Length: 298
Length: 194
Image (cartoon, rainbow over all chains, first blue to last red; front, top):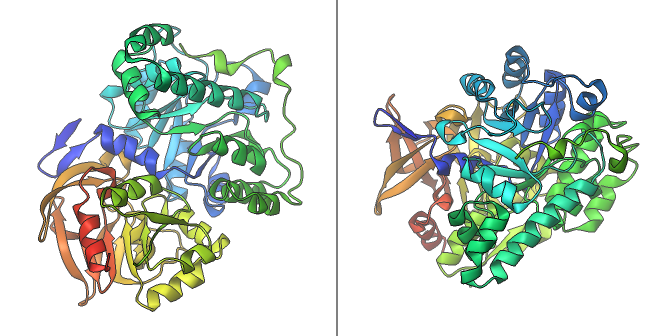
């Protein structure tokens, strides 16, 4: 946190977490060029994630996946009025410094890119720009929050179009939160040890029954029904990666997922927007995957 | 007893609900025209103004809400909610529309992108200082004679209003709902007859 003259404090936890609050109930879409960014904004996306290849293409191409070219990020910033996010490799704080210098609105320290550090994540407290990080369980989520993450997204399995891992991770996180709520106070110390999570955050979750930052869902959402499913399982917003621009009709799919996310409690709306959408992305059976991106992160 | 609603299409609806609850009130989440019919006053939350504008159209709320505002319904918009209520949006999308319930022009992200988002105490008429949380906040740059200022802020280039009202409609550039201070909500609700 720094003070700019006398005009106010920037980079506070409240303004960083607050932007995540503003995105709740919305859809954040992966885009690889300004045209896709325009389609996403037209469809009602609350933010776009600017990246060079969507996860399914990263999966197909192999090789090292890195931060996107700043030129592409700038073009997308110039095209849309909604927040623009971008991904840095796990532990690659120099990529994060570049993204902050580019004025991106959120950095995703993402397992979709090839990790740069197999021990340490980025120390996110030192940045003015807020970070979102992935998690597969509560301990991982709280470790990321301890490092300064201001939004958690359940990881799912990016680029598969298969919702099964997202469901597993959301249920795992929420079940662990319920167990903390039910525990006797004297048991929370040992539970913090088992979770490998900072004790103050464990105590906070036990008291409030929710994460200290918003919990969004990513990794495998490819239909309006998928969005309605994860929101009913407790996700507060959704990231859609390959699911939109790898579908038959991206404009319609994008609009349909946005409407399903707002009206997830009303199955008649989800049914209407799901009707005649054309094919969703083809997708993968996760049991046969060679590379599980969700296992990256420590 | 009048009934309060919160537009619940997208954004920080939960924080507004918690704030009005701390004042002893319940608010109906409004997502459909039928739900709008049930309320006498409406809070428009923070969120992404383009997404909320899109969802107002797809949910069929745009025309009925415009009609209610024209009829004088009390409304309070914070951040994206202020943008939706304003007469003119600068630096928005070319096709961005708004309800024109407040005779002001607002500039989207007028205080900068997220890295420029800031907190500062704001002196509100009749309340004293309250915490001001500005997130990619809209800046009120032009206003008509009927617009009353309740608070303003100087961000290094002159005073700009940050909390305003015009008749029964209130707008705020920042997010009182993100703090535990419920006085601005209390002031609005008092004027709205709650």
